[in-house]
Every structure is written in C-alpha cells, then in structure tokens.
Length: 217
Image (cartoon, rainbow, N blue to C red):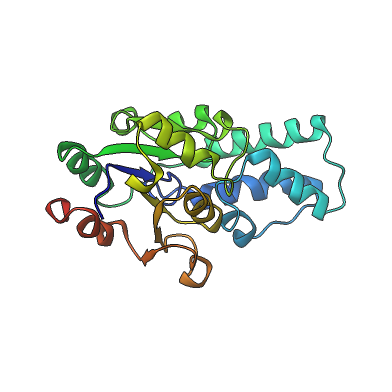
C-alpha cells in the first residue's frame, strides 16, 4: 500500500465514547417505552442520528413525528453531555502526530454532529486533521459512500489512495463502497460483524506498523 491519506472514524476508533452513546440513547428512549441494546447502537454506528431514531421508534410502533424526534434527540444530547468522560485510545495522539510528520493527509469521518465533535474531541487533536466530515455535513450518512468520498474530495486525493480505520459495519460498508482500503478495530463489536473490512485488528497500536513502520508505537 502507498496511501496518501489516512481517514479515521472517531467514536470507537480515536475516542472510547461508544458506551456513552449507548447510555444516552438508552436513557432518552426509556420514557417512551423504547428499549435499546448495545448491539442496536453499536451495529448502526455512523448512521445519521435521525435515521437511527426513526428506525428505533418505528420498531416500537411509535410514529416518528418531527416534534418527537426533536424532543428525544435534545434529551439524548443533554444526557450525553452530563455523563460523557473523555478517554482517548492509547497511542491515538502519538500515531496521528507521527503520520502528519511523515507527510500523510489525515481525515476524520463521523456520523456525530459537528457540535458534538467539539465536545468529544479536544481542540489540539481536532487540529491534527486536514479534513473533518461530520454527520450533519452530508445528505447520505454511512453506509452510503458519500461521507468518505466527501473526505477524499476535500483532501484532494483519489479513493484508492486512502486507508480508512473503522470499527462498525456501516462505516466499513461506507469506506468499501467509496473504493477505499479499510482496516477495522474490534473495539465495539466482535470480528464476525467486521468481515467486510480488508484487515481486522484488536487495537489501534496494531495498525501503526501496518500503515507506516516508522510510526509503530
């Protein structure tokens, strides 16, 4: 591989935030009698939040009106803000800094809205990325290829010149449909749910030597 750009998902790849996303969805939906599991949230990670919520409400036989969607999502945001504690995965910052020094372009593609990215990812780490694509900047979220294609366009590289680091089925599908090489992490789901990726590893540290041996941690 001779990539020009390395594009990362955020939740479950750079930041160990998925448990908080599950908790916030669980608590926001509980008053409506909607029960969600970790798998419900983790397996659809990267999907536009409105699409996720509509699907969960329909499953519970609740009509997803605009008023209901806004009320539940507002509650979810407040719960996430109340409980979230930032845990950056071991080696993430050093790896990003090394890749930048080696001349790689760095992208971040996440289904998380822009305002939440600022809360989840510290400014000094956001500044390491040349291009950030948030969930509310695309018409079609993951598993559609639009988010990763938008990142490649912004980085001015071809999809085949990109390596994507993901942790969820929808993100993997999005990257592969965009024509990119995809490495998956088992930080959220077991390997059997990540089979669409070109390579599956357990930790971010295992990836470092694969992309660039001089950046191995």
